[in-house]
Length: 291
Image (cartoon, rainbow, N blue to C red; front, side, top):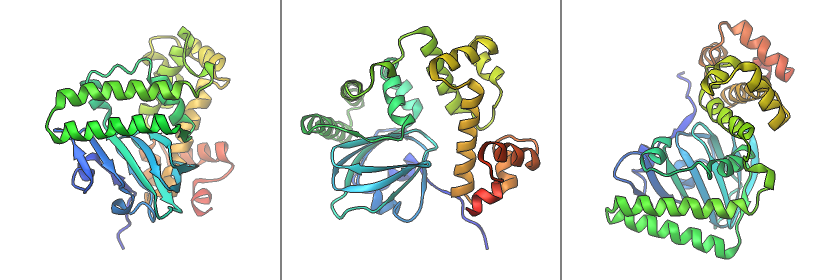
């Protein structure tokens, strides 16, 4: 019998569903209530887009990668490309409105996320839902309504301007809820933020501190010192955390063999991958999959 790989959510797929309006290209879609159509109550899906979701009524249990959270009315969650999402215990009145877009869309739309990115990254890193008050949620929904209308009317320039304003408004709402230390203010914290961005992009293929130091144009020793000072964990520990998390996701949610996962994560041999995984988890890959 042919094995089934992990289901994926692509923007091109969502464009075909009801209750969606789409930007002229393939990079952005505004959608309402996709849970039933995508059947995520039964199966995990891997999102191939950035997702921002707002719960406007009801509640549901949501799994983002290996983190669990309860999504309730006036909550917002975010997920980056590659995140595995599963929804369960959905109440009858559960309804979400969401934006899905590619990283390229943000760049091409000239949306400057320099000050917003640390705030959104704080939300994503904790797989945590954030509660808005009723006025803030009303503002967010009005933006979504306006975005829906301008997309439907074929006004991409106005849509881009609205998106810039929308992201600024949401980031400011989030900023008020974050600890003061969560927003980078020093050069060292900028290095940490850029390290995390690079790690998110390359961890499946690159595990050396030297690679990330080169990407940031600093020495491996300085990168290790900076990351340890800012986060309390070394650069090598962060790399291992990302790789192990990816390995767990593949073992838990995909039908790939352990040999295939070994190659997907750029390990030279299955034996090397097995020893690496067991050193960090206390279990072999096969033991973790069976558990």
